[in-house]
Length: 299
Image (cartoon, rainbow, N blue to C red):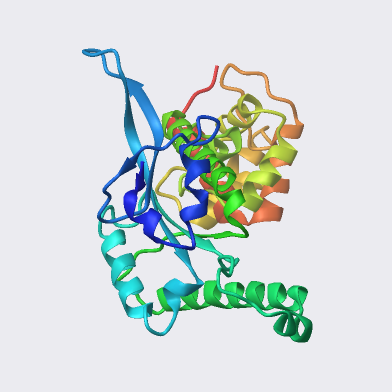
C-alpha cells in the first residue's frame, strides 16, 4: 500500500504510476498515518480462507531534500521518531531521494544562457547529497531514535527496483538467521581434544603438539594409561619424575616407567610423553596423563 498523501507531494507524485503498475509493486492506495509505503516481506496461506496473507511488513518513509530544509527539519525528525516507535526500528527503512523534483516554474532564456542546464543539474545533485548527509547526521545525534537504514535513491525511476532489492535482502537475512538457529552446534575434534585434560580447557598450543605427537585419540589414551604414575598423593615433582622414567620402578626392570596392563605399547610411547613434557611443561603433561588414567578408557 502507499499513502494517499503522496499525491500531494511534488517530489514523489510522478512515481505513483510505477508503484501501482501490475508490472511493478502493484500497490493499493490507502490512508497511512505513520508511513508512506507498506510492502509485504513474507506471506502465508490462511488455512481457513485460502487467501494469501502477509505475515511480515516493511514500512517506508519517503524523504527528499525539501524534507530537511530549515523550515521542515524539526517536523521531519518528529515524524521519523514516531515512525521508529512503530516497531523499535525493525522492518523499517527511509528512502531518500537525491535528485530534485523537476522545476515547473518558468525559466527565461537568459537564465539558461547564464547558468546552463548542466550546471543546474549538477547543483541539484550536490544539494541532494548534502541533504542526505544532513539527515544521517541528525539521526546520529538522536540516541532516542533506533537505527533505521536510509536508502539513497538517485531518481524516482529507480524506486521500484530499490524496493525489490531491499525486500529481497530482508528475506535473505531472515532465511539465513532461521537456518543458523536450526543448525545444531557441533564441537570439532580439536575442541574436544582441548577438553582432554585434568584442568580444561587445554591451551591451543598444547593441543597442536598432541595432534603432532599422537596420530589419534586411541594412541594418546593407551600411552597415558600405560604409564606407571606415582600415587595421587605424591608431589608434582615426584609424579613428573615418573614421566621421566626416574621412579623406583626404573630400577626394577621397567626403565621407561611403563606398564602394559594387558595392552602392548611400543617403546616410543614414553619417549613421546617426555617430548610432550619438554615442550609444554611438567604440569600440563601431568594434566593430560591424569585425565586419561583416572577418567577414561578408549577401546
